Length: 355
Image (cartoon, rainbow, N blue to C red; front, side):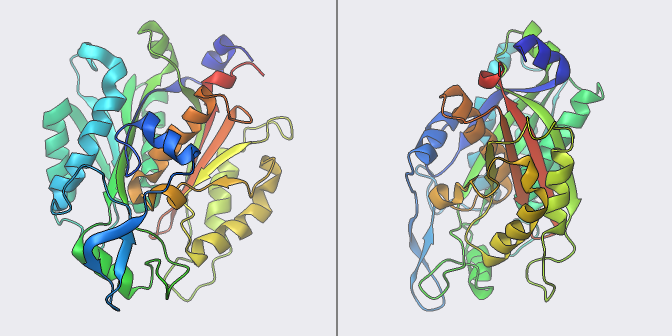
């Protein structure tokens, strides 16, 4: 299908990207590092676990380890948002504030008590945004995409910002992860490496993006969010029902097998619960994929990005298309929150517009 045909078929597109990760200060650098298999995992300069061993983390290359709380999250989010909004130029969103859907970490020890209101106030002042905060953890970034997508489709906005920001590098948060045996260590091989970062995308009505001569990086095809009742840290056995429902809903419009998915990006991070959940889900949804086990798992490189995960997946997917190494035009992104949210977003990459 031609670009014009895809413009008509998919009325919402991604026209801007921004990222701040332990692998790079911008989206392109971060994506290139993941593509090259470069890892940012290292020992924290002074945090240790209960056994006195240094904690493995990924940490921003520029920010001081002593910067904490809302200040740290703001410092991560601000440059990523500025990068994502750059295609709008000086005119920005016009006279009206730009709706912004921002994923944040779930409630947990070490999370700033007034995070939503304080961060929203800072970003409103920085960029003239109208923020809606989504404190739902891993799935929050993709939930932000879904809400922005629906706002544009319904005509409530022509451009929206969507993404997320997170950091696990708070003393109380790391202690909590250690107590729950979630930290990767010599004694816990099924834990994860806590990280920090921010990722944001500029979503726009495709027609508006074309009029403003913004580059269409990808089209949003579908999005879905469901709830998994059998959650981590409970005695229930998860068999991937919520995740499989989210993926099935996001891919329900595909004409199979012709439109199977080549690329998929997820928040698998080494935790056994997450791995087993996806294996069960894959058995239900495998017909939508060329190879449902061929996941891109960037936590191996930049650590667990928490609420920033979903929007950072978009940066990886779009880079695969723009650099010419994507195996096909469709990319699926999915993530799972501890609170039960399961979110999936399907993209059509612009550089594969003609099949």
